[in-house]
Amino acid sequence: MEADLEAAFFWDQAVVEILIFGRITIMKLPLLAGPPPISASGIFSRSVGSGKGQIADWRIRIESTGRSVHVLEYGDRYVGHVDRFDPLRKPLEHVIYDRGLDLVRTRAKNLIRKS
Image (cartoon, rainbow, N blue to C red; front, side, top):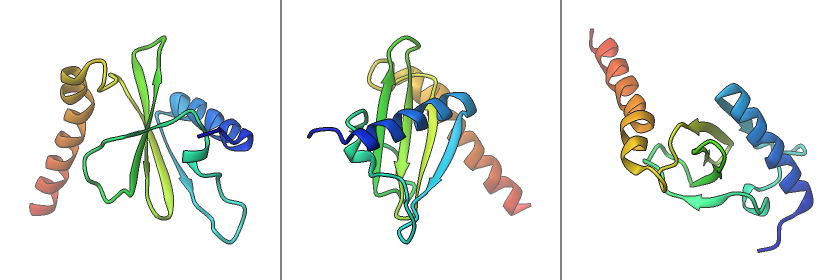
């Protein structure tokens, strides 16, 4: 698929923001000029992620750091975050350090709700 220049520029800038801030949310605004489709960027590849209600997962590897940017696409928004370890390069480290943090957060939230 050929990359759309506008989409490539938008998503390249989004990757920079995700790397700076660690996590961002980009709202899809159908009635206004929302973000171009991530699939048209040419810089992200389809990926697999744990089920959180998303309709698709997208990933780009940051070669110089070993990290990756993971974007979850929902019907109304994109949510991007940085994974310290690229799951294709270091799957065990990804599960322990990146995915493990999500599991701890989820368990903590459940414990707080029960008390």
